[in-house]
Length: 89
Image (cartoon, rainbow, N blue to C red):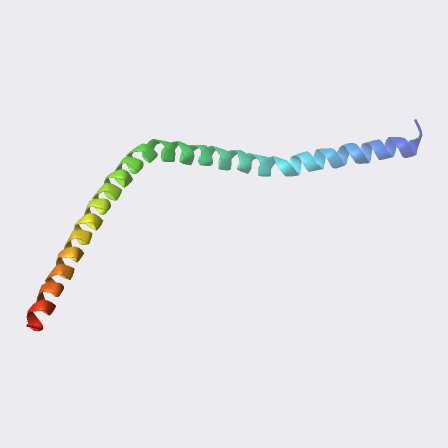
């Protein structure tokens, strides 16, 4: 092997070693971030069923409230009609 080829291989090998050493902290931080993300997903997964149940209860109450307001609106419209009829007599 010629000295240029040997030198080139040494330079390439050193470049690879430097790149790997430089990436180790980034890969370690990525691993920590992935572990935290997994913990967060587990927490959300644990809380989600109860949150969905609460949301369903809230929506059911909201539906009942909307129905009651519709009935109240109808009653107010009828009262306005009665008052208008009484005022025109």
